[in-house]
Amino acid sequence: MSKLAKAATWLMLATLLTKILGFGREMALSYVYGTNAISEAFVVAFSIPTIIFAAAGSAIATTYIPIYYEVENEIGKKATLKFTNNIVNVIVIICTILSILGIIFTEPLVKLFAIGFDGERLKLTVQYTRILIMSIPFIGLSFIMNGYLQVHNNFTVPGLGSLPKNIIIIVSIFLSAKYNSVIIAIGTLLGIASEFLFQVPFAAKNGYKYKPFLDLKDAKMKKLVILIAPIFVGIAVNQINTMVDKSLASTLPLGSVAALNFASKLNSFVISIFIVSITAVVYPLISRLSVENSKEDFAQVVVRSVNSITLLVLPVSVGAIVLSQPIVRLLFERGEFTAQDTKITAVALSFYAIGLIGSGLNDILTKIFYALKDTKTPMKSAILAVVINICLNFALIKYLKHAGLAFATSVANISIVIVLFIALKKKIKDFGQRKIIITFIKSLVASLIMGFAAYMSNKYLAMHLSSDTIGQVISLGTSVLVGAIVYGVLVILFKISEITYIIDMVKAKLKLKK
Image 1: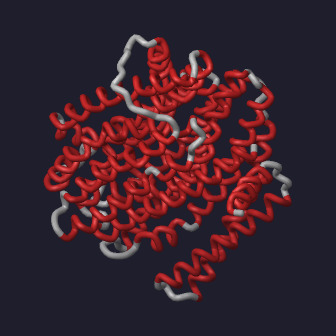
Image 2 (image 1 turned 30 degrees about the horizontal axis):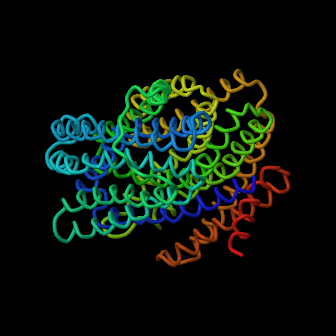
Image 3 (image 1 turned 180 degrees about the vertical axis):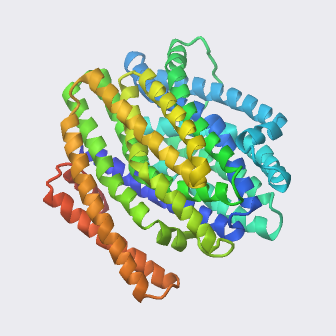
């Protein structure tokens, strides 16, 4: 597991760097535009291309990895390049068609994603979307380059892929404020393209060479299409969740869409660093173990992966709930982002954080089912989740406004995890569920105690320190440190075995530095 730990460590560090810049992007947007019409128009327009192709792109990339191994084992290394180019060319064709259709039907598309937008907000969103819809081919190609690099044990480059993208978008935000707001959309298009272009040289270094090859009758391509259908549906319903949330938020007072966006970005920061980093490294491994039918090793990886996510995410979830206000204030409250914006964003953050553990465990459990060649179970559970989310959206939005949308998402995320655990037990009987439950309980207790310690620490320091940026940094930083120490001591006292796995990841990084 040392190689796995090293890979996960490098990926976490790479992701941390890019996500810090991603935060810089959100901070720049909040500073320059706050939660006004331009900010909300950009948020919706930016999400449309991703939502349109994220389902198909994620499904293709997810299926690509296990089938790549099959091609390599059955036909040989040379055939994998042919297989990869076949997929690349199919994606280019599909994405180009989607872009053209998006440009033609931009206005009805925008109204689908933001039913409450009208006037200036609608006009701006349509203008931005027409530009950003052209990014779909680059989004699709990025997914494949990401998968290609991962099967070649290169996890750091995919983690750094959004580095140039975020830099370009940040620059475009400030330029748009000085010259013309449309620059923000043009800069974002260039940024998304750079994410793909950044990965190409590294893929070439790992043996990738593009060839204009297209064979829709290829047996492995047909298998990919068969496997991809339920994965696509499973991921697509999650995108429907996002679309419904944004559309309903557009009917609420100005600032609701932007507040939900900033809050969800804070949550995705945690998901990207800890959860995606672990699942990205583990998925190729469990895919290989599944093919080799190594049940004992497979179960061991499942337990370690699930418990590692639990140990990392639960304390962050509790911390985000009890410290939501100071976190949002420190990160965003400046420029056009007001105290009222902080308040509504912090509320959304707290409700999103409740379901953070659900998001994390859902990701790894879904990958486990895919590795077992079961794509239907995650699809069915995802459909159930979207039904729960939509029903709760309509039930809660009346009473909790935008917070109700966030809470509905959290409940849906937790529900889907419960369903997946039950299904996994039926499928492989004993996958170490007893160890998983014990670790969850111990981690939850430790997290709640940690949360109380962090909250009281922040409350005390806030009363005795100035409210300027330095005072906020000291207060929040000290509270987080106190919480981390309390949590660390408790998990050691509780003798949670998986903590040694996380420590191994840190040790692996230290060895790499030497």
